Image (cartoon, rainbow, N blue to C red; front, side, top):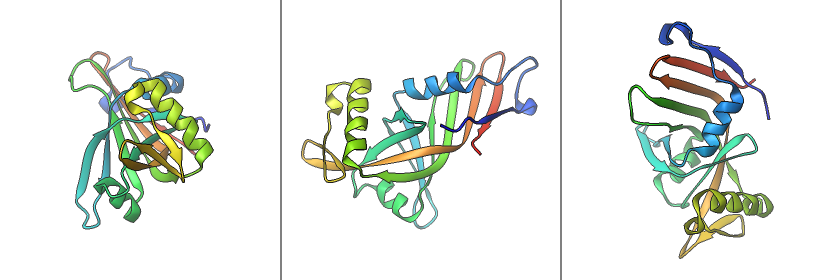
Length: 168
């Protein structure tokens, strides 16, 4: 795992605010149950939708049906932003992960990720793995990995803060 460099932006941070440790930020990513993914349609319009994701091996992982809008968008433009946090103004911590979505098709890796999904979300999210896909009920899903290029963190409530982690 690459260790990112943290930069606290004083323009948007309260006096005395400090950038959180990357380990704290990773723990927030690992614990978050819901993310919002932003992709770009072929005509340039944005597409945003919620989904569960798993933090493993220094990356966020999500799955989607191969015919869903986000999968079709990623086939054209793999750049994404995944966000998580709270919808409360003065409490909590929001995160934005920017990176490139890369398909995961190795069955061994997919089995590890399927176990992580079930451990995090319960038996509803049980996936069988075969032929480079997750299988659940009547359908299959492709899995993507997003290694962060940049992560933004927004501390809400005193002290307010804005931190950027760059992965170089």
